[in-house]
Amino acid sequence: MLPDTVLPESLLPRRDPVQLIDPTGTFTPDEQYALPGRDRLIDGYRHLVIGRRVNDQASALVRQGRLAVYPSSHGQEACEVAASLVLGDQDWLFPTYRDTVAVLSRGVDPVEAFSLLRGDWHSGYDPHRHNVAPQATPLATQLLHAVGFAHAAKLRGEDTVVLAICGDGATSEGDFHEALNFAAVFHLPVVFFVQNNGYAISVPLRRQLAAPSIAHKAIGYGMPGQRVDGNDLAALLSVLGDAVSAARSGAGPRLIEAVTYRIESHTNADDATRYRSDDEVAPWREKDPLKRIRTYLRGLGVLGDGDEAEIHSQAERVASTLRDGMNAETVPDPSDLFEFVYATRTPQLQEQAAMLAGEIAADAAGTGDVK
Image: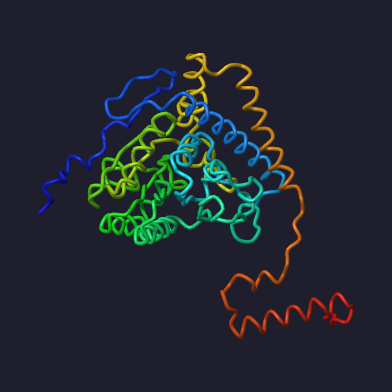
């Protein structure tokens, strides 16, 4: 039997995603979710502008051969920014490969954040410095890591909320179901945030699930689910902020589905025109999250020309830092091959490391064998 205090109806998401500011920049009050303060929205807009500029710069770096791959979040920046801004300094973010803007919004250095996508070793940044886990390329694996981290934090009595991001494609993985079930059973402080951008590479959402929505899956695990307009920064801040607060208060996990769209191809290696038309993409360009919040703030008179100039100048500085960092050649250290495999090297690794070191020394001395 269900506990008397938990009714299935209380776990169900709304039919229509929560929206506070529509694509025209008009605010409509909501009975459940409050509009964030103006300063918070202005700060969010600043991060949006920086995120868009970073997306554009990264795409250019791919074409120049300075990045191996880039999964753009163009059009999804509001999801990225909100996921970062709703967290406290003590909280943790577990991102995917597409969430670089969220990583930057947590304060990670741009060059370090992009090292992974350049092909350098490890993730490029220290996860403990800003409480950001390494960006996960395999689908949904980071959700299990996030749940384990939250479980440990709860056992230690820490005031930590974990926000784990994934895409709609990841919800088809077994790791997604295992993570949600474990989090719900152990009542962990985790917010699962799904960016439903319509496609798992070329597979549309309608071919991935039979449920009314991704958020409706939450009821199967005994946790509340909610849908939110993924291009509405204000709604995202409110809905995600409420979920984080609930998790922090001991109310357990939440599943939040942001309904958005992937404007660009899956990555630079993908040709999106093979499975969708320009006519499908066009309406989503009109729902641009930057244009929406900018129109609202300009209408209030709290975002002037000077403010915008300063914000865009900051975005250019970030892009310049990224560009200069990616243009600088790195010098790999072959010993790193053995440095971070085990905490204590095995005899085999010791032998291999010594062999490589000897070969490098012989080559430098000009005494190595030429074959």
